[in-house]
Structure formats: C-alpha cells, structure tokens
Length: 300
Length: 260
Image (cartoon, rainbow over all chains, first blue to last red; front, side):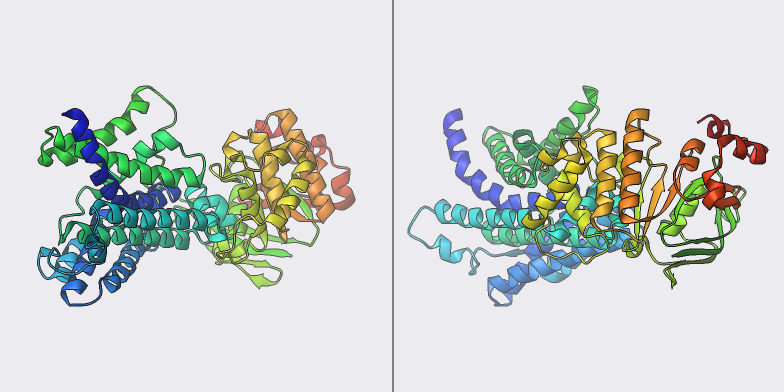
C-alpha cells in the first residue's frame, strides 16, 4: 500500500514540481540573491494564469498568452521594487500592497473568478494528444523549460549586472561606492523574479486546465519550503547549487505533499502543513542556538 | 582637485536633538595631497567623508571635484572619482561572493555594467598577479568566498580592489582601527605603498595621532565641525605628538586620541 502510493506519486510530483520549480527559481532571486522578502508572488502567479486564460478565451495563440504573462509579471515585480526604493515603503508592505492590488487586477483580467481551459487548445494540447502516456511528454516539456530557466538564471548571475545584483543583496553600501545603482538592481531583480512566477502561473493554468483567482494563495510559503528542502541537499555554496536546490526542492516538496494526500492528509490542511514545515525549518536552528539563521533579509 | 566651500551639515534639524556636525568647513585638497584627518569623537570626521562621497548631502555650501559641482550627486554617480575604505573590514567586500568576483566588481567601478561575463578570463591572470603582491596566499584561492577570509585579509583585498581602477580621490575611514596591531601595521604599509606607487590623492581619517603625524604631507584637525588646524610641508614633517598636545591640549579632551 505504502510502496504503491510512493511509486504512483512520482510522475505527478515531477510534473508539478518542475512546473512550480520556476516559482522557486524566482524566489531564489528575490529572497536569496536580493535578500528582499517579496510577497508579490502570491499575486503575480495568478496574474500569469489569468493573462494566459483570458487570451486563450479570446481565441489567441497560447504562446502570446505566455509572453503577456511574463511581461505582466515583470511589471508587477518592478512595481513592488519601485514602491520600496522610490516611495520608501517597507519591503514586506510593498509586496503585500501589490499582491492585494493584483487580486482586483486578476479579476478584471479574467472578467470572473475562474476560467476553465479543459476544452480549449493550450500550449500543452499537442503534447497531450501524443500516443504515449500523458506524463512522458508533459514531464519532458517542463523539464526542458525549468532547467532552461535555471541555466539562464545561472548565466545571468555571472554577468556584470548579475554581479551587481548579487552584491546589492550582499553589501549594498559597498556596491554603491563602486558605482552601481542599487535601486535599479532591486527593481530589475524583482521584475525578473515575478516574470518567472507569472510564467509558472501561465504554464500551471494550462497544465491543470483552469485559472482561478485564488490559486496564488500560499505560493510564497510553498516556494520557501521548496528552497529550504533543496538547500538541505545541495547547500548554497555556488549559484548553480542554489538554483538546482530550488528545482529539486520543489519536486521533493510536491512529492511530500502528494504522498501526504494519498496517505490521508486532508487537502484543506495542506497550507497549514506547509507553513508548519517552513516554521520548523527556520526555527530549529534558532532553538539549537545556532548563530546563523536560515534567512538573512534586508529592510524588514 | 576637491574643494569644500562653506559646508554645513545639521542632523535632526529643527528638533530638540539638533546637532551641527559640520559648521562651515572650507577646504581645498590638491592633486597628490595625502591628508590625514584627526579629531575627537563627534568632531565631524566621518560626516565630512560622507559628504564628500555622497552618502549624505550638506545643508549648506558646495562641493567640487575637479571643478565639477557634485554637491547633490548621488553616491553611485561619484564612484568614478572616489574610492572609499571603511573601518569595518566587512563593509568593503561582498562576503557571499568569491575573491575573483569581488575583484571583478571593483574592476568596473563607475563604469556601465552590461551582460558580459563578470569575470573575464583575460583579467583573471591580472587578479592573480596583484593578489601575489599581498603575500597572503590569496592568489591560489580565487574561487573562495570572501566570508572565509579574516578581517585583515578582507581589508587588504579591499585595498587591492581600489587599485584595480584608480580613483581620483581615495577616502580611508579609520580603515585599520578594527584590526589587531600587527595586521593594522601590515595593512597600513600596503596602503602607503599603493598611495605612493599610484600617486593617489588621499584623505585618511584616523583616531591615532601617531599615525596622522607619520603619514601624509598634510594634516588637518577637526574640532566641533570646524577645521582647527591645517598644516603641511616642513612644518608637518617636524611635528611631534607633544607639539600637538602643547598647542591644542585644551581642545583635545578625548584621551584616547592622546595615548593612541
């Protein structure tokens, strides 16, 4: 019983873990690289889903929907960055404000609170109509997309701008005296982060066959849980390790959740379980009186 | 080179805590000057450096660098002209990044940053060469994170980062004060060498009277936000701690300054 649950959980965890791994990669940029506690994520995820769902309903190609999702996510992230750097609004509050505003925006974009995509053609429809087990092409698709984004992130963070962005999160004063505009770096980083998140939202909506205004709730906590799980395995020694930790962590997180559901965890308790998981991961080092906490953030 | 005209800086203006940190400083520092700045706590030393580097802007007066008015120019736009090293060795480097990545960031000081690779292969050789100069064995540890280095090693690395793209003006803010005496001496020797070899215009704030007398061609004492004295040349060369105490003992109530 346990073993068969275990095995049957693997494909679905791979599919969802890879799809949500893009969110985790976005959170690596905001929380890990910029050390910015960005809560925009809970709003930019459904924003991406809403954008793609609306365009598909309007009869446009899903690929335009995905591109629009990326652009809107980027703008949402930049908005949070601008509220923080230009209007000097506390970083947590800036994210909460944009997230709240996005709730209305998402309802406007969709015109209602959810859109079904089961009966229309999406980006994934050609893959699903192949004469093989549905999981194989879908997992391959998400593997290519997510690993592709991971590699792009690794490359970007080793460019001159990437260095300036990492230094902004690490030592703002230092990189400013070396001539980088840390405000711009924060805004750009949050833009990229939320573009990833919105892309993930757009793909997940097509994968699960619907977009719902509430689908972003708890996204940040789930993303953090993924990152913490992944970092326990890969550490944070290099950028490459941090990004692979996000992706693998996301798969393991989805695996734990699916397994839990199969073994009788009520779906209604999911977010509580995730929250407790993050609390334990962040809190145990403190209880053990370790000097280094798990998360160092600025501007909180 | 750099000119301060009637600079005034007031903190918590208009409140009961109002404090005049800089009270009308006029100063002209010439190309090639190595100026040491002393003064007791609260004399305005660090505030003066902050005003020059753009960390804060003055409430009155103007600042010029090479004839260009920079009074309200933000900090990152002055980086072209200025190099700054802080007292805290942790301030000058990004600890989660590697030694070569830190050097590469400094390589582009004040320049436009693009999407080219941060560490260029051709520069890596140069980084190793200059790291050898430190004689700390860092040339074999290019990929190590800076967080693994000691305070003295980090401060030496920060100095090296300044030399990668030479500033018009180097600001040293008690940059050896947080180090143990032996390391401090080492870092100071290296500082002197770098300043001399590159003929860098330098302002060095120090708490240590002996150091202020020993180094540089010009010495300024700040007191209550004003320039108390400004001596240079022969007069500076022949100066002793006793002279300063004799002439300014009354103002030098800060005992730490005298014994140091």
